[in-house]
Length: 628
Image 1 (spheres, rainbow, N blue to C red):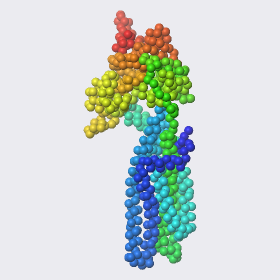
Image 2 (cartoon, rainbow, N blue to C red; image 1 turned 45 degrees about the vertical axis):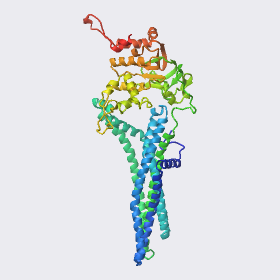
Image 3 (cartoon, rainbow, N blue to C red; image 1 turned 135 degrees about the horizontal axis):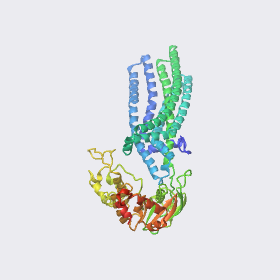
């Protein structure tokens, strides 16, 4: 279990080293330039203070131009450096930030995408950590590197002014440093508290963003307005935001109280030092130049110490938050991959589930309970059952998005655990019940089904024809290049918004995406026509029957008429196989399947008005095809 500090076992020093390594890989020139710049910026105030002392002392002694001119020129150069170097530093920081952000995001999302399973993505704790990792990736590495460089600058300035103070008054060195120590302790304590606070409010922040997204999402806009949900969602969002703000407000109060008292202590020390220097100069113990350099040294030591402590506190907080980034990047996959994956042969015999048990975690009930099933090569197997029977979960196991908790799944005798998930998925085509509608062009939405073939527009159009969506897409304003989104502009210069499709059209588009893989060994169709009208559903299923003839396929649909021609129909109930057989065999059993089929068939019968004198029966096209 990770806490505010990120993954256990990764020390703060190691996290800092990782950040420096990333900065070097991202922008070595900018990092080197930044180091040189901060060294110059660290030395410049000390050099300026000493040059000022020398100029004042020479003026007090009546020195001539031959002595004063070089000192004045050197003082001008030092002043110029103090003005120019911060701008150079800002430019280099910008270069470093952009390079680091690109590299950090690349590695973060590469690591997230490298997990072949779904378990982490269905875990709220992972989403909390991912949000913090994403937030840390934006700022933490740069802050760690920037704070480290600033600390180097502060140490160099501190060293120069400490030497200066030691020459003038060793006692003041001790007093000034002692006054700064409590600030260091308080800053570190506040840093730890801030990291704990950010972890504690992570869920509230995600909920706040969630409610905010619902208020602006085009998908939710209809129901939000129809049901009058705007004020309700806004209230929920403000409640979560209030929790976040209260936690931050409490920390800010603590910071103000602690730092205010410490600032008063620092000001008192500086005032005392100034009084001592003025009195010493009046007594002849210090020159005018000594007083000026003393004042600069006291202010410089306090400023440097404050900067070092502040930068270290910022770096400490960034190091704590950076632990979340390292935790996500270095986390092992939720789905294990065999060290030496076995080769996956083309499917020739079939896929076998052997005593498969599955549940999503130990605190939830079993979704599948001892399922034994053989899916023969070249045949269609239909899965039937009520909601929650385990049909979609079984599909996830066939795609190896999860592994069985008990039992195993074999592809021509090869255990899927021994195969690399990418090799398996390259042989599977699927359309899921909860298909995606991407805010991309129509062609890109289909092309995503097979990126390797997507560069050629003809496979895209062929898949669209098989799914019955080609004519619709071809008549769009820009054809297959039309953006299917109302929240982005297209890439053309006219900044035209895209178009939206109906639910049934989107479903056909998702089917076309799956059919980009029509030559794969296994085709999975999970409710491929649930959003279609009766005529469209009839046409789609006729096309799919032709397409999957002789292919290995797994079919899921609540419309049983669409499944009656499957070679094998399997009825799932409470995670177990309750019945199996052909349509005719299951109807003859008069069990669950026959009851469900009868219920659906009765839905197409109109109860006649007794006064009409005769019964009336109507059947939709899809029901007529199902009744053959």
